[in-house]
Length: 225
Ligand SMILES: [Zn+2]
Image (cartoon, rainbow, N blue to C red; front, side):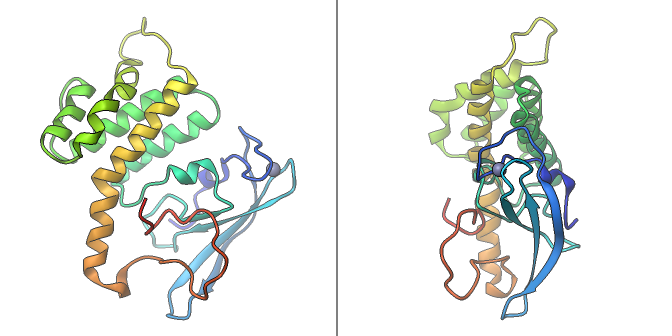
């Protein structure tokens, strides 16, 4: 899974154009690092302002379905999470995609599925989403610091359950997305990164590029976020 067409659906980080699909110019451009690690890059372009965006994606056998690096970084990169199980990642990326094109109700449903799938990976399958998240906290899978902001997912847990449900607005869905992002980092990214660390440098994926080039945005992996 090297390049995923879903990577094209992103806001232009240069001019801010939203609800757009960037034009793919090149994919799978392999650049070999001095220690022999191959890195793969795509170039996409904004149809409005003509700016280029570089996207680092996984090698053809990679299981990662999120961009590794995007330069310049857009908002969705802030929301990228590594080490997600496949089902969780699928719902999570779906939520971001529909939120980006302005369908917060659909995003809410995807976020609920994301959180339910995440909880299920820890053996938690409460009927009410809030209960599942509370249980994740109780059981120590996520820190207590999530408790005060649990209300950000209440609307997400209810939407779509009944035809009469109130709609979720964009701000509510974005709040729920940010909550979800942090929760997923706590549940999957931090343990996954620590696990990589124990394997030693030869197997960790992609530290910052060698050569000490200028710091660029969008290095979600490996940083202390
Ligand atoms: Zn643009």
